[in-house]
Amino acid sequence: MSVPAEDSRRRHKRRRNGLVDFGNAVLTFLVLVIIAAAAFAYFGLQQFTAPGPKSEETAFVIDEGSGLNSVATRLADQGIISNSYIFRAAVMATARDAKILPGQYIIPAKASMADILKIVTSGEPVEFFVTVPEGETAFLAAERIRLASNNLSGELTGDPKEGTILPGRYDWTQPTTTRQSVLADMQKRMSAKLSEAWAGRDKSIDDVIKTPEQLLTLASLVEKETRVASEHATVASVFVNRLRRGMKLQTDPSVLYGITLGKSVLNRGPTSKELRAETPYNTYVITGLPPGPIANPAGATLEATAHPAATKFLYFVAKSADPADGHLFAATYAEHRRNVAAYRQAVKAAEASEAAEAEAAKEEFAASEAVGAGDTTQ
Image (tube, rainbow, N blue to C red; front, side, top):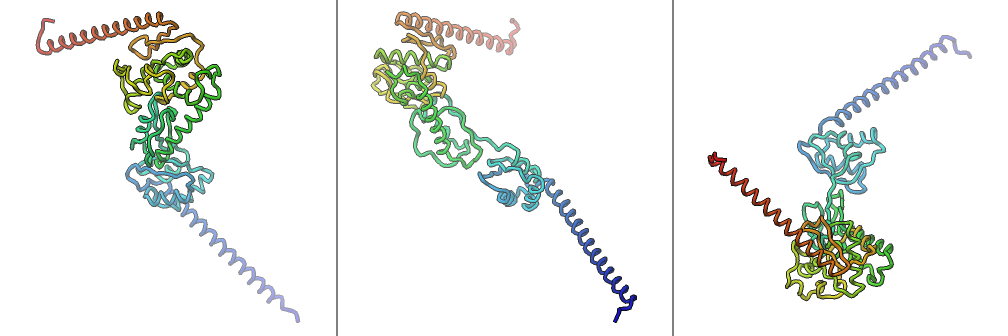
């Protein structure tokens, strides 16, 4: 039996209307979703760029290997950001490939999440460092490491052995870095530098410098004898020449080290009594090198000592009272005596000049005092 045409049209219309209604419902739902998403995005953007909750500057530490989730959670826990989920969403939306860098950061007061994201992905962490000067003893270098202001954690286990620290600047970004690890880095670098200098040494020194340890000891003497880097190889040649002849090294810094053992600095020359003192480091008494280094020589000093200048010099003396002026070198004792006389004359002239300057300053001060007291006879 056939269905009347009118009924067929009616059923088709109902199906079509149902599809339209469904489509309208879906479209309405999608529009609402888009509006909600836009509203959420707008709200999130507002929160992301709005001033943060912290009213004061705050230090924030990112540990090595920290990910987005842990950083966002810790920022929220410390009250630096208001919402960790918005921070994560913003990172995923705007800086998915950004790398969060470990270290300590200083977050400004009221910094927005956008500001903080920029700081921890493209800013520079706070740098902490300690500098070991060339020629400083291991004991004094360890004291630098022990300073609380270095922002290091833990304590050193004992004092480092003399000469095992390579002078220079050592940096770190983590305030949780330990003192022992910084010292270990210093010692590792010295060990590597000493091995390099020894491997590349001028083999002509092998008759008197037979081990890396002896090279280190000699370099420490050179370091303490002159602050003028260009003289290092020449001073080294003097010591090598004296060792070959069996002459005592007679270097004042080693005498002073025998007194202090590196635990203090004596800014003076040794006394006549100290020059006769029986210590293992008194090179006016012992023959050859002292039993070990008397300071931490720089890498460049190790290299210069490993390649001493080709000279016949056996003596040297300062040119003046100013260490920056360097030294006068001599191959004979007679020439050395003339250099010593020149040194004494230079010191005497400098002292006379200083005395004259001091006297002039006193006269000027007296004149000003007289005028201030009402003396108008000037």
